[in-house]
Structures are given as C-alpha cells and as structure tokens.
Image 1 (cartoon, one colour):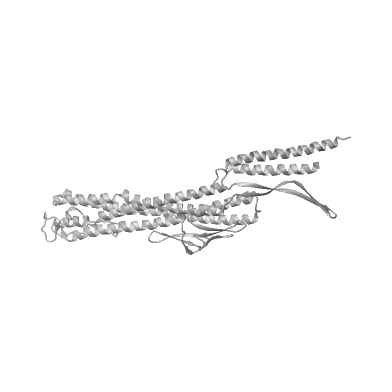
Image 2 (cartoon, one colour):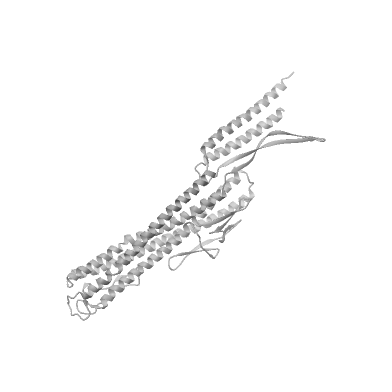
Length: 445
C-alpha cells in the first residue's frame, strides 16, 4: 500500500509540474501573436494483473496524456484571407498616394495657368520684349514641371518594383521554411510541446505568406500543409516537402508579372497583388501625362506654324519632345513668338494668332486635362482609402474572433496556476503520508 501511494504521489507531482510548466509558458507568451494557447490533458494510470481465472485492476496515479494546442482552422483561414485583403489594399493605396504626390508636387496645373496668363499679358502689348521673354520662360517652367512629374512617377514605380522583388524573396524564404516545418512535423509525436511549437511556427509562416501573396491552405491529419497560390485552383507553392520558386519580371510599360516555377501566376491578394495594381495605375497616369504633354506641344506648335514672328518670318516650333519625359522649349527667344496671323508684316501688333492659341488652350486644353488627371487621382485615392478602412474593420473582427479562440487568457491562467500548485502540494502530501506509514511499520516491535 505505501508503495502504491508513493507511485501515485510521484505521478501526481510529475503531472502537476508539467501542467505548471505549460501554464507558465502560456503566461510568458500572452502577447505573442504567433502563439496558440496550450492546455494539459491528464489521464488515469491503471495497473492490471491476474491470477488464474481472476483479474483485477487498481488505480496507480495520473499521467500527462497530451499537450493540447487551441486551434480553429476556419477562424485562421478567415484571419489570413481578410489580412491578405488588407495588405493588398494598403499596397495599392500607398502606390496611388505616391503617384498623386508626384503629380501634385510637380505643380503642373499652376504652371499651365502661369503660361496661359503670360500669353494674356502679351496680348496687351505684343511688341514688349519682356512680355515675350516671360512667355518663353513660363513655357520652360511648364515643360520642366512635366518632366519632374514624369521622373517622380518613375521613381515611385521603381520603389514599388523594389518592394515587389523583396516580397517575392520573402515568399520563397517562407515557402522553404514551411517545407522544413512540414518535415519536422512528420517526425514529431502529436500531443507534445515540440509538436505544438512546430504548429505555431507553421501558422506564423502561413500568415506571412498570406500577407505577401494570397494563398489557399489545405491540411493533412498530421498537421502538414499544402499551399496554393491564389485559391484552391491555383498552382502549388508548397506541396508536402516540395516548394515552388516565385519570380517577378518588369514589363516594358513599367508593370510587373509573376511566374511560379516558370509558369505565369497571378497573386489574387496580398501586398504583391496590391503592388501590381498600383503599378498598373501609375502606368495609366504616365500615359495621361504623355497625352497632356503631346496636346500642349501640338496646340502651341500648330499656333506657331500658322502665324508669323516679330520679324515677319513663319513661326518656328515652340516645344519639342515625344512626351512628358523629354518635353522641352526649343524656341530660341521671345522674338520668335508668332503673335500675328500668317501674312502679317514684321513688327505687327495684330494678336489674332495668339488669341487663337489662347482659345485653343482654354477650351478643353492642357489645363482641363491636368485638372482631370488630378481629380481622378484624388477620387481613386479616396475610394481606395474607404475600401482599405472597410477591409481593415473586417480583418480586425476576424482577428478578434481568432484571438478569443486561441489567445492566452491571463485570468484563466492565474486560476490554473493556483489549481496546479494545489495539486502539486496534494501529491507531495500523499508521498509524505506514504513515508509516515513506512516509518510506522518499521517502528513496530
């Protein structure tokens, strides 16, 4: 009997100590978002025996059956999916805001207004050299603002492409790490602390993957995961102990394309998808700037060709270039401005030609085009910000639901500390009682 008590007490202390260790681990990781709460499952230890046709069993203590890890595959999938949508919206919004800043800070619209104002001032005295010089100088300023806007937009695109390249590297690193974790999970006994730790690492890598590139995850009974890019019909990024290689390339128009193991692939969400969308939007803005520059060059150069300069010669081109990136003033000086219509004599005060140019610029001209670009950009940024906020609220709700299921509750863990400490003390008392019984038996005469 005392020996049985000793065994029972020993098993109780071992089980209580294991439970205390798990509780302490929970408390230490209360603020670790990659950690899922653990609990200890205990079971009875029963000793059995038989003599002839008679058999008997007796309780012989308690043991740790398994370390349970709180988990919810549905809530985890929801949290990953909504988090991936937020990452996509954030990346796209960031790219649009950079594009908006590139156009606004360049000052295209004010430069157009100043150029048109200098033409109006020149109409009052077409022979004034300073007014003519002001038109040329404001033209140079306008051309420079267009080049600055195009250059800033190009730099913003370079930044996004750099971030996308970094994101692809992160995806490949996370995929390789998942393969390592899958291999370790197969070799680890379920229900142990080591197995639970591997599952924590697995879920952390899955969340990183989903934030970067939207994924679909399938689970095997052992805990091993398969990961597909996009949805369940997408190509495999991770399949057991095999990982694919994601790559990105830059297209001639500045956008990016993705390939998985050499085959075209399109992330449906995550920061990579948002960066691809932002680059597509920046490409369209760059096209609009080129259209604006071409319209400006066409209208001003046509007006020059239809009029005469101060010396009576046919007007020469004012601007040259192929778009916003290389537009420049090529007119040597203010005397070359063709203010008078064709056929007018030298030093003419006739402003019919400059009036025609002002009319062309005013009616759906560069100022209207610049205003349209800025308005559409502001509207796109505003709508994307609203979408991002809505997606953020949904993602936060999903994360809260997941935390309620898997996060550490410090109040509950404090109660567990007291409970398991009492259990440890009670088991120690059982050992003490068994020792006292031995001492009493040995003291009998």
